[in-house]
Length: 108
Image (cartoon, rainbow, N blue to C red; front, side):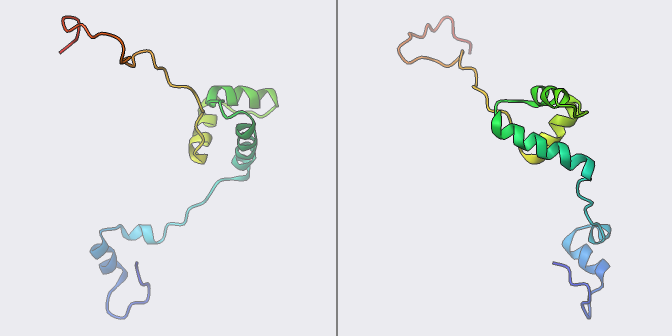
């Protein structure tokens, strides 16, 4: 996208043309620290075994194993890894085709 050694366009001009900030050219993502990677690996292993665990249950399970982690950190790490608990959605208000609809009771 941006050519660093372009003969006629400076970096500032290229960034202005692309509508991006010049500082974004120099940004290098740090990645996760080793202190964070260890719980992430354990969360991943537990999630394969218990895919119905949410952040609360995952944090509780990890604390029982001796890992110091809170619910919010477990939720952040699960969100970062793209993990979401599998759960059955409530279907209490789904209309049944064989039930009669009474028009005076419907909300309009």
